[in-house]
Image (cartoon, rainbow, N blue to C red; front, side):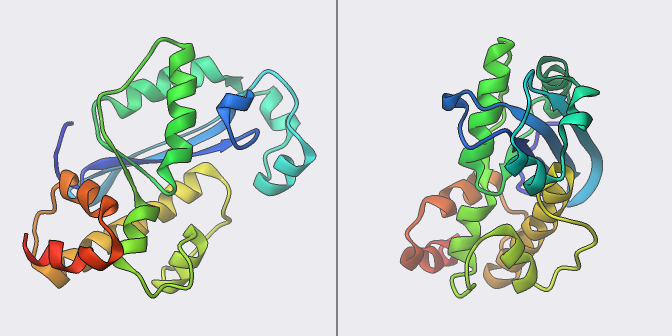
Length: 205
């Protein structure tokens, strides 16, 4: 399903062996939530075997163990399935530059791509919630009093939490500025505005 509305998208999150595919790091888990008109309609979650052991730090941070990954499908198999899942939908992640780098790197290995555009919930939150203590996902979930049932740093859980935050941000923008529906392209533009100019820009929409 293709939509230019910000409430019809795929929200994704990777867990990885490290910080950068440029340094040889690989994805070890992908989690994603599809929303259509603000309602969750599908989910995707798989572990993937990066072909080597992961560090004890990553095991402790994510709760994903080397034993779990040994039994998982290869990165190539999982990412082929995930490319089919996202189709041509637009994409959102919290700190999207990180997830986009891994998505691009893993799909490039398979000579696959995607047509959807990216938006970043972290960049949007910095402009919409300028008085938040910080803009980490966990902090924003507390800031907006979102109920948490589970643990962070697993891909599907983080994608689910980002989805809840995203829909609340869209609702807050809609109520504050009387914009409905909210185009995905508008969110992309807001995310690039200086903090001081966001209010005036949205008032003019």
